[in-house]
Image (cartoon, rainbow over all chains, first blue to last red; front, side):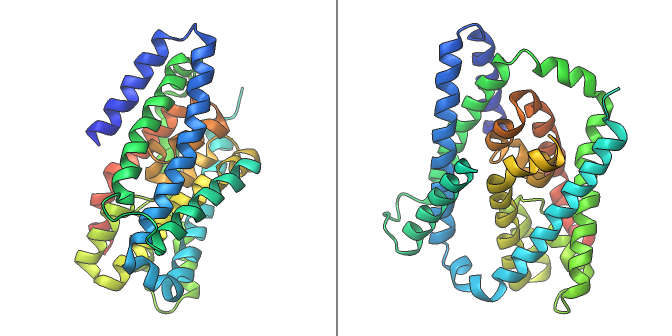
Length: 90
Length: 198
């Protein structure tokens, strides 16, 4: 958690320092895309390597998927409502 | 849409590699995820620091920023409540407890396992991993359909780290501050909410 914040702040400071170097910022944004793909690969890897999760996937996978789908749907809809009630452009 | 497919492909490739042990045990997925995450956060930080609109947005949002995590809590509780009406094997409290991980699967699944047992712990683990995956896959679509706060909302506690890059990509780096704030509030609430509900 501390490291998470540290890396983020380190990046923000770096970004602020190079804010006028268009080309460097473009490179950073390209690298971000690559790192997202890599992150997903490793997330898949850690899920796939977890025997407990893989073996129980068929029995409670659907249950977990549906409860999460409704949780996400509820969140997005209430946020959408709040967005329109409290953040509307004047 | 093309990017969503690419992301899904990478995830599927990792999943298969993990199931069939194509990678040495020493190269644990969790460790690597963490290192890539640090790299990602640094890169996202660069995008935020270089964006001149970040401060402008934060200043215009002020105290209303608390409404974002609040709406995530209310929405998650409503959604999981609806689910509990259709699933007789889980009680309302159990559904709320699973939901109040907000995607923070490592902590919430351990907490729930300690309090309510192994099987609900595994559901919490799966469900909260799925919340992260849904957000990673659908962030661009959600942003287009329901506005710029939608992927932040879907991400829950993960909007401060793992889903932050995809959120800023689909909404703009000026939303990074709101995203981190919302994720941080929800992350801090997880260890309090889960025991309180069960």
